[in-house]
Image 1 (cartoon, helix red, strand yellow):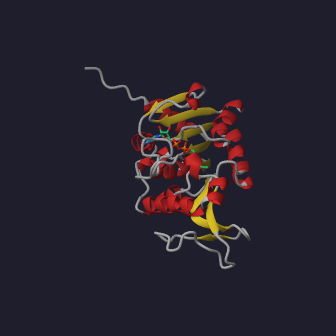
Image 2: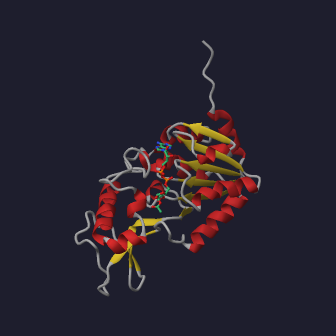
Image 3: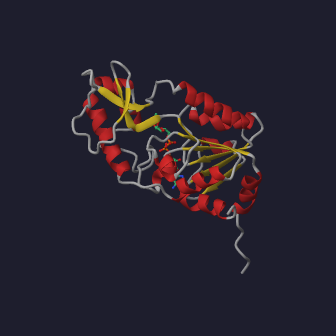
Length: 246
Ligand code: OAD
């Protein structure tokens, strides 16, 4: 029987040679940790879609409902640990001269795995922001005692995350765009590539003659222009890529 072809081989070589790598991650990178994705079969919470909960309008209409959803997500995330995909990306950072990990995730698992150069495009679920004075504080209470939580000024707090229709933090998106333009390789892991502006970052890399590699379980809109797409679980594929670097 012929030996099985190792499709990760050239990818490994490419990464080994690269001086600058940008990584864009989505919910799929945390799926193997047990964090629910947004658009998969486990993406629904009660009967709601993410677009019905993660909006300023939903929060204005029913802050308790939105906070209940975030409280549920915080409890799920608190019980999760970084998986081999997070760990492989933390290891990749150590071996590339210029590296930036751009994540749409709010779970903090990349940092817990040891990643240092991380840009959080959509905020962080462990911070809350006052709706009156905009002060941001860490809040790791699980479960949240009082919902909605309140600022010392008495006003209701909201999760310090980006909702649909809201702009991304300026410095975060500027740093991400710079990295997308300048990197030799962009590795895109576990995102449906449906939510802007994150979904446009790999296009920016292509326009600047960078090389785009996708890792997902299935094709996405990115597949049409990615240089390579690999359909395998991130927690399986990424550690294989890193194995040869040690
Ligand atoms: P989605 O839930 O839309 O997509 C997750 C992607 O990960 C899908 O394409 C899956 O096929 C893939 N996937 C699942 N398990 C995987 C695994 N083990 N290995 C590799 N890939 C896997 O999540 P995002 O693309 O991150 O924003 O969603 C983007 C944004 O939409 C989120 O940041 C959030 C959401 O609304 C806001 O809340 C503003």
